Length: 432
Image 1 (cartoon, rainbow, N blue to C red):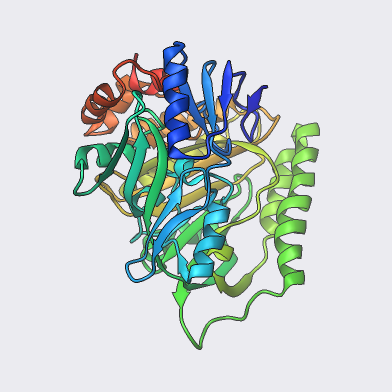
Image 2: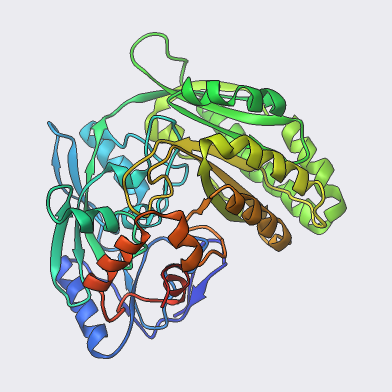
């Protein structure tokens, strides 16, 4: 059976597949595959654009290993099985009166896949999803089950929260959750020059801030989400308008524009300007997962780099100048987010407040020249590529980008000396 990721950028035909439904079955699958000389990779939801999950050996499908194991409402500590999707997690937490403090805009990933690749949301005072992890249980290459936290095997914990599955298979994840909260969402078009001029103010003045720049338009879509309680929150968005805005406009209509641009490349620039000019204003309030998460049915390829916040405006200036010279035009907008520094060894925000620049191209349209341009600009700013999005960086580059890279490799040598969890992508980013 062939496995393929969401965007179709990676596929594999594993020699063997397992569907474990317990920690013991995960351990049995790993030791069984190891005895037969097979490498092992865990399959999540396939939302990484990189071949992180690809294997010709044994694939562990964790989709049946889901749900909450335990929850302490007083402390907010919730242990969840690693195959649980963010969507399932949000629903279960909501029933308990809890929530994640910060999330990205996709909820199809598994918890383990999201943290292992460094998935993040946005907020200058907030960290990524892996920073909300309080403890991990993982199964090592020899089938042993180990736990780690900030106080129990702290080096393993610092390495395993963002590890691309190179250290073992996560079986359970303990998350530090918060009481459920409401977000007031404000989304509106704003002249790009104004957004850039006010960037520091907008990032610092909102709990969650991001903007989308359409490469050939004058306007950016600015999103500001802030926690609210009691009176003063805007009204909920009516169901009919949510359907119109997010399903009709952002999926059906935008998808139609993309298909037209793919069919007639000369039309991309005016279509992109039309998309930018069609942006609408909307303000509403809703439970946090309903604001964080957005339906994304128009498929694309993506590359994203984290750069120091102080470098962002220079990076965008170079990117804007470079996009104007591209042979093949760009249909999709560029997304810019922010995050606070953390202490996770392979987190893209390790040791520095970061700005994230994510570029996209509609699936089936040329992207190689664009992505190469972007990567060269990000590299010159000391950028760190998102582990789950397209890039060409190797271990030599990454060793210079991450101060604790050698420490991570030492933990890998300890936990998987025989490289049971190896694959070509891990060889690229960590070395043979």
